[in-house]
Image (spheres, rainbow, N blue to C red):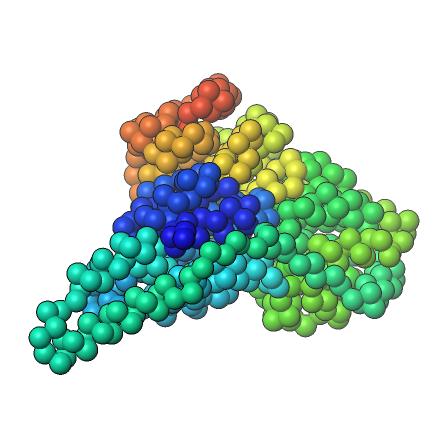
Length: 577
């Protein structure tokens, strides 16, 4: 009879899981050992959050739920930030949490807390397994739940006495028995016998089911027909696509073709960035707010009207709004659309492109107006890259990164001001090559995201753009990158400040308290963790240092470039809350 740990490993293998991210602990050791024996790569990190961030990255890039396992108590609680980030980003992953033995729950054992109460608000579904026979069906249900409907993270608590060999567990229960001299002691012993028998009752061997495939949520044909009719009448339409439209990685190519056939000016956000490549004629990067205010029809494909759209106020009040979203609540948030379609936004756009003949409608003047405005803004950014100042101009550094990165690169961003500045310039070359935290805006995703991205795309260059504040959250994962052969390239925009906060705080409140950092030697920290470190203080050396970083990464070493950048007012007034 397979142990509980082996049953879990069987399910993971059946679900086509390649990586199990973890930070070891006695409560989960049987899972890790069994997973390794089943051929999964067990990737141990230095912080539980980064195990979940790495699983999140794998899920976003592959469409298959990522998996992490963390030990009981502090291990589970440490993972909460990453779980919430995945929940708000609608990223499917499965977190396995260790737990104290079932008969010790609530008795003061090591790391025993009410984990379900802590986790449930931050996941789609959470369960605690009670018996060995329930491990397989519970875990299979977890995978199904993670990808069904609005995708998201799920949590399965696995008590330690369900994971080890039955003989060993029975010996543990025998050692817990009392002397049995009093009626009370005899009662306790009878309960322990009953309890352990229940743990293994009917625990016959059961083969896991086949991998659960994400069900397609096709849009209603009537809704597609109505959307095509509304679009046909529009003179100034705009398409805004968000990460939800890319939740199924397999749809990326069809999505690209659909956007081309629709022939609409397109703004891409989040994981949708890169869908149309680097220089597509319909893709726009700047002045989105102005375009939305001038549009007479806006298609929101997987984009809610949250703070990023000023709660819907950026969109012309008289515009027709067509929204497609997995979540009805998200679709109706802050501004109810003219036409709302509950379902897969990507499949909706594909169906709309098949139904609509809008590609032939003459909207050249509208597209040209937006294109001309976009080009003017890009030229202005290039000019600003040459502005002198103390330290390297961050725009110039971003432009040089944009020039040198390979076409297969995956870009991970983790930070505030430097990262947001770079996002104006650095363009992913294709779909599913951009990883940002999402709506939660979480700092600290960098190390875990870069790890997951490099393992999921081993032949791709992975560029991690760090702010110097954000870098400290996950620099220790350079050890993980080095040990597990995941040579990412990190660039720290080091201005010695929490600049995004300081810029507004000093002007509004007259005090820089809490925002001042020092230009620390982050490259030496990376070296200490087994990577390569490069210091960049002279703008003239940017091409040479970037080229050296690429060479070192290609040779198998993770690299960190500590770039001393200057402070600018490029993003003045851009803070959002």
